[in-house]
Figure: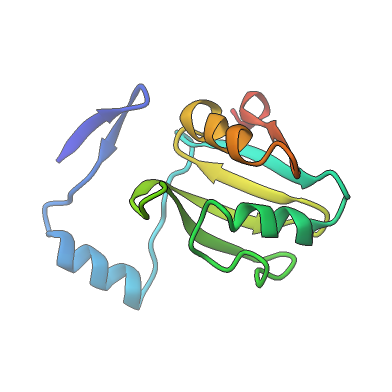
Length: 130
């Protein structure tokens, strides 16, 4: 099944079924197209990636501090009641965090700017992404 999403046709279910797709990905490999997503750079005003990671942990239930340089973690933005607002990927680039979310340039970017202005500088990279 294919649905319209972000001005593209996105497959959401394959004819072989969700379980078969899941098992294939777990046992062999999977590919995820992120071209519809939006990237951003999150840097702490102090220049320390640890401070940016601690700040981001206010908004996600994952341990972002433990993400080593050159590694990434799948995370979810949560609301005040623990409900999931959106998912994102967080990579540690050593001197800043690189975030990729759907669509970061709108709701998620506003969420970051609203909750982290005292610690993080959020720079949308959406224009250079495509």
